[in-house]
Image (cartoon, rainbow, N blue to C red; front, side, top):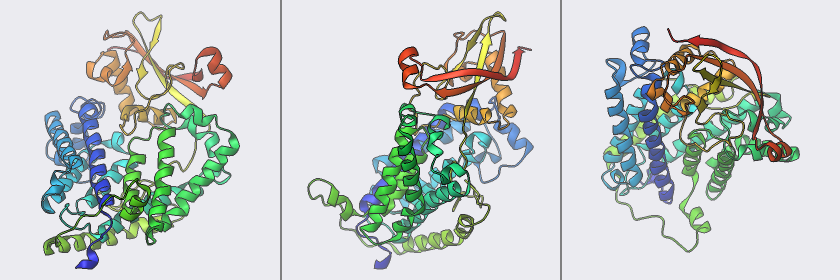
Length: 469
C-alpha cells in the first residue's frame, strides 16, 4: 500500500523516535532518583498503602505487589531500553523491534504513573505516554514511516497547542487583555535563570509576547495539516515558540516534548532548504510488511475512535485541562495556565537545634534564598519542588507535607538528598516549622544594591513548630 508510506519525512521519524525515547530516559532516571523517597515503601505517600486503600486508576505492574526493588527494576529497564532507542539500535532491525521497545516503555511508565498519585498528576505524564504509544508504530529504518501515524502525531500537536490556547482564552482575563506576562514570569511554578530578565522586559513587549502566543496556539496549529511547505512552516513557528518558553522557565519536559511532537510536520525538503549544503535526507526504503500495515491501520482506527472525546472537549463550554478519557492514557486533553496568579507565595521550611535559632532548608529548584539566581533543571522534573508551589497556592498537601516534616525531624538521609541544603549537616533538629513568605522579583536597582534576585517578607505560619515524638 504505497499510499500508507510517507516519503520525505525520515528526519521527522528520527526526531520523533529518538526524541521521545530521550524524554523517557529522563523520566525513568527521575523515578530512580525520586520515586522511593516520594512514593516508595517508606515514602511520603507509600504506594503499598495507596493500593491497599484503593485500586489504581489504570493498568500497572504494581497492582499485585509493590516493592522498592521492583520499582528500581522497572525504572532501570525503561531507562536502558530508552537509551538504546536514542542510539537508534532497535530501529536498525525489523519493524517489530522498535514497536516492542516503545510499547515496553509505554507499559512500564504507565505502571509508574498509575500509582504516582499527586506526584505524577501532571499533564506531561499523559503526554509522554500517548507520544510513546504512537512512536511504537513509526516503523524501522528499512521501511517508510506510515503516513497515518505521522497524521496522528500532527493531531496530537494540534490538541496540545490549540487546547492550551482555548484554555487561556476561556480562562483568566489577563490572557484576553494581553497582560498575563506582567505576572507569569514572576509567579510561574519554577523560574529559571532567564525568568528574572524576561519579567523586566518592557510591558508593551509582554503584550506582544501574549499576542504571539495566541497566534501560535489558536491559529498556527490548523496549518500543520496543510501540504508542504506550509506544514513545515507551521511546525517551525511552534518550535520557535516553545524554545522561547524553554528560555523563560522550567516546565519539566513539556516544552521539549512539544517540540519533538511538532517535528512530525517537518518535511525533509523543508529541512534541506535551510541546512547548509544539499544533504540526502531520505533513504531508499524496502517494502512494508503486510502485518505491519494491518497493525498500523488498526491502531489508526483505534485512535480515531478515541479522539472523539478530546475533540469534543476542545469546544466544550467547560473544557477539561490535562484530562485522560481512558485507562490507557491515549487521546488525552491538554492545556496549561488557564489562570495566572498575580502574587507569589513560598513555603519556607525551617528547623532549630536549640529552639532559639532557626535555620532554613533550601530546595533545589523552588525559590528560597533571595540571593540565589534560579537554576535550570528542565527537562528534568523536580516533583517535590513543584508540589511546594501548589502548596503555597493553597492546594491541600497535608497528606505528603506533614510526612515530609517528620522525615526532616528524623534527619532521614534519603529525604535530605532531595534538598539542596540541609542547614544541620545531617543532624536531627529539635523542631521544624513552615512559614509563608511573599516573594517578588527585585528591581534592577535593588539587585545592584543588595545582590538579591528576590525580595521577600513573612506573611504567616503554615505549620507551627513541631517536635519529634
